[in-house]
Length: 235
Image (cartoon, rainbow, N blue to C red; front, side, top):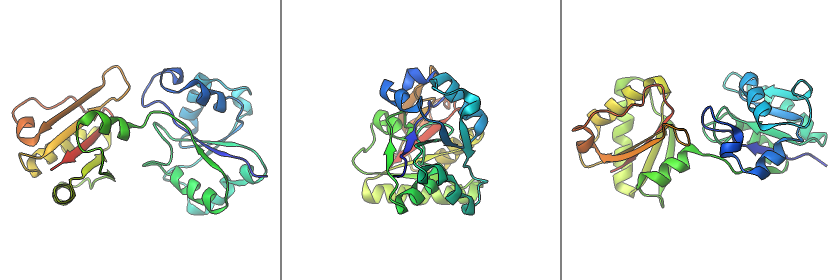
């Protein structure tokens, strides 16, 4: 029999796992000895805080990130084929969502390996819940282009799609470019379009504010520089 691939959420920032993960999730983590992680150093810190039955040095951690070649994925399934359960970790939030772990999950599904998602914080759903925007119809767009002209074009297209389908558009940015993204949205989108900015979700500095573009222009910009942020648009 093959093992189970557990998709293990991690906190969205520097908080203890016990503060954002249910007890039963921590109970799944502790007996595992095989993990696929985005970065080994931060994964070890998380596992130390979560608690493991085996010593940290006895755990087997394999990295899967944007530098992992596609040809290496097959090898990461080897413990599962031999009957070992494996935990998949992202750097923050839920694995396989805006995360290279999705490729491993796809391969596991192809081999009929059981995949079990565990409950934990998802910045996208938390932002949508608190935004007051359309939660019946929405789309996550990942990262938008970094160059100003390309980003403006993408934003105009998202705004058109949002208005046509009454669909909330969610996207993210590298934290040090958050302010450039915010300024680009205000320069590009229509005054009546609603923009929600969700920052530091589940952390002490958490903030979720929804305003029209016109209203955002009348007030001071939010403090989002170098802070994890989700942007949501509804035209």
